[in-house]
Image 1: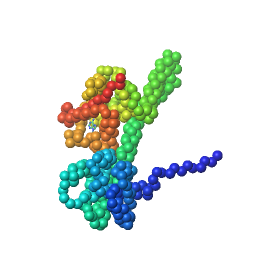
Image 2 (image 1 turned 120 degrees about the vertical axis):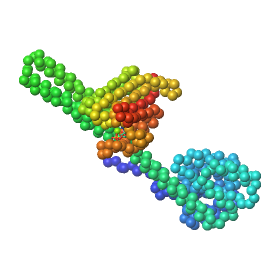
Image 3 (image 1 turned 135 degrees about the horizontal axis):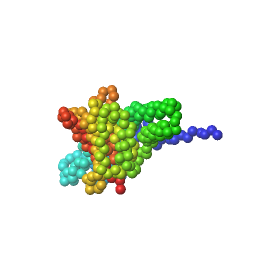
Image 4 (image 1 turned 180 degrees about the vertical axis):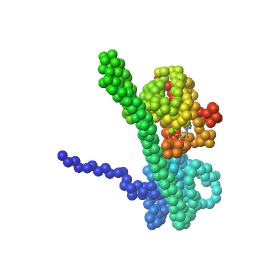
Length: 396
Ligand SMILES: Nc1ncnc2c1ncn2[C@@H]1O[C@H](COP(=O)(O)OP(=O)(O)OP(=O)(O)O)[C@@H](O)[C@H]1O
Ligand SMILES: [Mg+2]
């Protein structure tokens, strides 16, 4: 059966939306001001919406508007908080323009009080009545131009957010990509061993030898299975926080880096004072962090060294139980001038081979989870090295 495509009507069409965003809300409850101003704006081709109620003014600003024109008498003291409430809820890019038509003449106690009350309104243009039409139109155009700039900033912020999200996703793939070479190597070693064992079985088929070769082949294949299981976890793990055993995650990353560590002549020291330390975390995120930090340490120890991984218990700032994970290397150290910037995106000293996203993503994950992260590094000859530590709440 053929289905008719369902058409979903957006709440506003693009044109309607632009119209709403650029219209002017007019609130002038007394006399003919409201009609006169609306007529003036319409003749100038500027969309507007008039209302006699301040509550409606507030809700219309919430719906979207470019500016508002309001007469001072509409802003009696007890209604200002309503406008302030709406303006207080504006997003960070917004500084809504208000054109306030004041009563001309002497400064009175009442006018002084109003002046104090409207101070927190922010982006306010004051026009003293009687106002010439061209003054009002000129001021409104300036206000609307400023508002359009704010919309540009808003659009750029949206694009920036999207780009960041794309970067975050690409870094996750990159971690796996970087590990792929390591993984291929890891799998190749046991497979070569199995090939050799098969050769031996063919040439030395005595029952005793066969049993030994089969046991060895079993062990080698078990290693392949371990490596493929750990690799698949990177893709399949849930992204939500669950009880996760920290030492297990560290171990699974070390399995995948095994041959790179051996090739670079790096010894690994594990100091796990609480072996079954559980944290509440997405295992995928934790694995990504640890893979990034250990990957950097390996890069920094081209001529061998020591990688120290420590898991210990500690207290969080609020006194609750925490787990501290420290990953320290005896590598080249981070240059002092680079240290304050290493968590920014695209900061790398690795040229073509680095993207400079590893520590940025690590920091983002740490911030989002409310964990604490610290780094110490030295380039002092003979004592150079870097230590990253993470402070994570323990799972109950
Ligand atoms: N353990 C370390 N020892 C020495 N320098 C380090 C260490 N960790 C990070 N750095 C420095 O910080 C820079 C940024 O690290 P980051 O992981 O963000 O990017 P990267 O490793 O260069 O690239 P990638 O995006 O591939 O991870 C590195 O280029 C390096 O100069
Ligand atoms: Mg890195």
